[in-house]
Length: 274
View 1: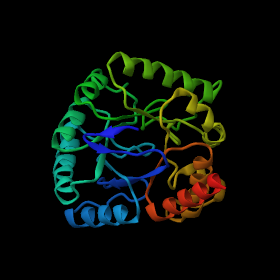
View 2 (view 1 turned 90 degrees about the vertical axis):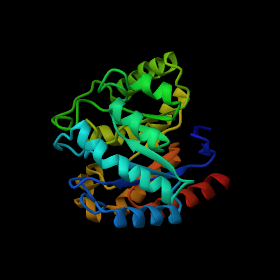
View 3 (view 1 turned 60 degrees about the vertical axis):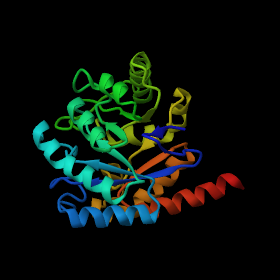
View 4 (view 1 turned 30 degrees about the horizontal axis):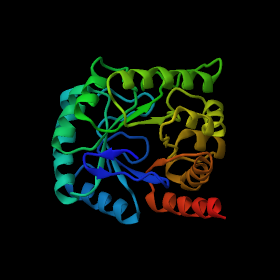
């Protein structure tokens, strides 16, 4: 059971990580939560619907997204972290960042978890900072970077490559004394539709690595390209894939829509209890 700065995160049953993007250009809800009022209202809604974690991001990582400077990222994040901590003192706050300086600053402001899409590869020093901060670390797999990752991604064996990457990065984490590591296979981050469904089909195999699994499928193109939907109409497809992920062993669902994901958890829990 990972613990977050004194606030326990119980993963004996799957939990929800609710997404709060404070960016103007995220692929689904960009621009919706740019004010203090809209941010607080959305976080309150997600917590009331059952979210255990709020994942806050100030850098869009959609394919082809423009880069955001470290200074701009800090300027966006720090006041929001402070505000959320003041209004929701018992909540668990995760920060979606890949920069060590940002990670240190947001934890000092009250954040609990670092969620790193680069898995420690963007800048030297991220793992050292996480070790010093003694917070849980979500280590994600991504091939390439957000600008180029969806330009014909290729793998000889997608599961073997992801597993090897996790093994290597977990060893580095252990060497740094980081014990609270969660793994995210990175659906849509340098993967084709076929790669994504292969990962989902074989998700259970990643449990052998001994770390909780974080799954982010919410409204992504792997749904839209199969169903001919758009992010705005992909809620049903998201719920279907979230349900499959839960059956395959997901511990945390990272979602835009908390209520529907919680319903999936309750139903799958009933299935497992039968």
